[in-house]
Image (cartoon, rainbow, N blue to C red; front, side):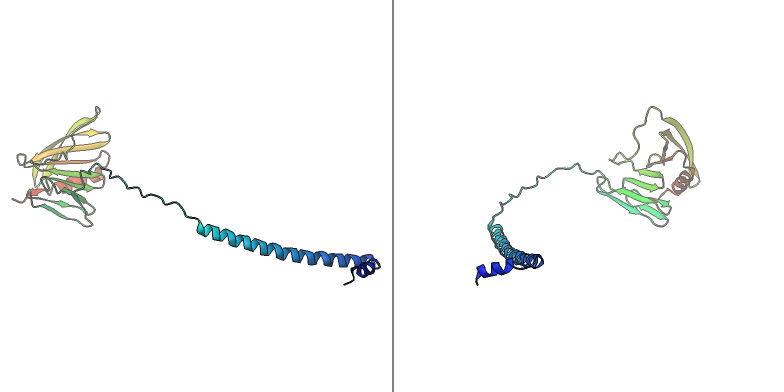
Length: 211
C-alpha cells in the first residue's frame, strides 16, 4: 500500500471525512489493543491459578481436649415425672401412698436409700415426704433473721395434726411428723397463694400408710 499517496488523498478530504477516518483508525487500534490485553490477562490468571494449586497449606496440629471434671448433680439420679391427670403415688419401699392432683410433678430419690425422699410439686407449692432413714437433707434447714414462726392444724384421714413452721421471704413452710416419726411431711407455698395452699392441703389429707 502506498502510504504517501494515501496521506495525500487524506489531506485532500474535507474536515468531516478526515474525522470519520481518524475515528475509524482509533476504533480499530482500540479493538486490537483490547484483544491483546484480554489475552494477556487470561494468561496471567492461568498462571496464578496454577501457582495457587501448588501452594501447600500448613497442617494444623490436633489438640486433645482435656478432660474437665464437673461437679456431679446431686439430683442426677432422681426420677422425675409429670402427671397429666390425677392419681395416686405409691411408695413401695416405705409403704405409703398419697393422692395427687393433675399437673403434679413427682421427683423421688433413687440412690442411697431409694425413695426415702419424695417431692410433689404443684403450682407454686411443694410437698416433701422424708422417711426416717433418709440420708438426704430434703427438708428446709435454714431461715433468715426475719422469719416468723407459725403453727397450723392439718387434717389427714380424719385425724388432726399440728404442723409447725415459718413464713420467710414471702414463702410459707410447715412440717409435721406422722405416727411417731414414721414419716415427716413438709409443705411450702407462696404466702399469698391461698388457692395453691388449699390444693396442697387437699393432697396431704389423702396420705396414708399401706402397712
